[in-house]
Image (cartoon, rainbow, N blue to C red; front, side, top):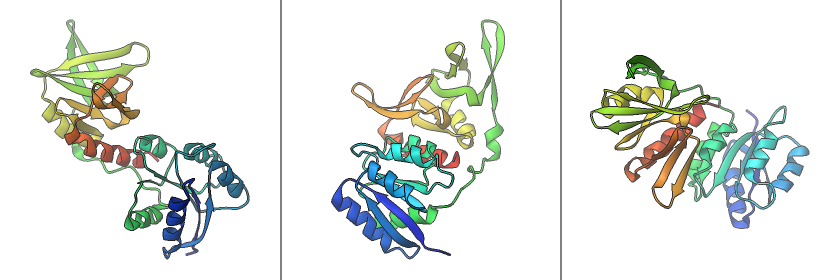
Amino acid sequence: MSLLRVLVVEDEPSTRTELATQLAELPSVGDVLVAAGGDEAVRLLGGGTFDAAFLDIAMPGLTGMDVARILKRLSDPPAIVFVTAYDNHAVEAFGLGAADYLLKPFRPERLAEAVARIGRRPGPPAVGDKADDLAVVQVELAGRTVFVRRDDIAYAEAHGDYVRLHCAQKDAGRASHLLRQSLTYLEQVWDAAGFVRAHRSFLINLAAVTELRVTSTAGLVAVTDAGEVPVSRRHSRQLRDRLLEAARGRR
């Protein structure tokens, strides 16, 4: 197997040197080139082929996201690994097809794991039998029976003896329906379909999350087209981890 040729794009000199040095020490890595910013990176990428690009995100001029979008237009793009101090770009990063997302300060073993992942294209996670349970739910609305697809539900909210299902409808705006069921039961049967507890009163569809945002009033919230969902400290780590896993699976 040929050694990997990689490019490190980082505007902070000490971090750039540290990252390049650690990469060069890995047995699967050969040439390591460095760029101090996005503009220099694009020039280097235009002059030769690379197996992987390790990109900082917050840089003057072209950001790491800008560089990644340029790389995606190449006929044979390198694998992209983001190395950043901020975790709020992870969903967008994996949406661009990133192979991995490293948070600074990174551990050597975590960097080695990212290099090992380069070139892999994992399929979506296996879905258990329970994923089909309540794939369509039946609710009563003004004397009518309405069938709601689970995939159209952005989040579920505990509402006394019921659960309120919140959907974002393209033509009709936001809609919600009451279902006589417990949030705990929905969490159990919908876990394999990508629904995760974000708060003791909220269950959220990972596929519906567009961003995580910190607000001055509610703290951390998950943003969906159907509204914002509060994320408690107790559930924030699991939610972030599951969002990363889901984003990797969609690549």
